[in-house]
Image (tube, rainbow, N blue to C red; front, side, top):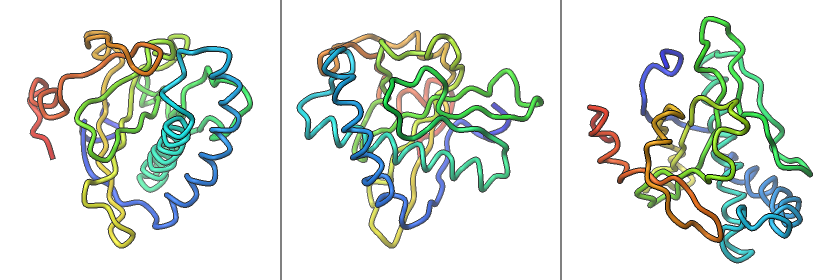
Length: 189
């Protein structure tokens, strides 16, 4: 994963990112209502929690795109808003030198979240995803300090995580974030 320089780090993002995520997230939530009504694996909780989850997802994807753009890494992103479930990676890196780690699924971690998790029903998106890019807004986030932590995890590592109930579906859950990083020989931020 040399294209990211490390398996974790911090990055600053533009001030209006959260506001954009709220607007796009509302559209995603509305589009996903039909998907969730047809497949309970995508049901996180009640509609309020589902809307928050969709907004966090858009927020994380915007931050990840900003990361690759500011580091001048060529990429293609999946649409932030679609009427159908996306079966393509959120981000595909376009530089052949970066293969095979170039199909990325972006996941959000709650601001005070202590674990990474990935929905089992959506894991690897038809085997295309080889890398997960987790984004977590800093716990001391405010409008004047737009900082997020990022963590990069190989998809093969996630298959080793325990599976637990999450919402009405099941998800892979990591150890605590600090324990997961320690198992890789990395100090947590």
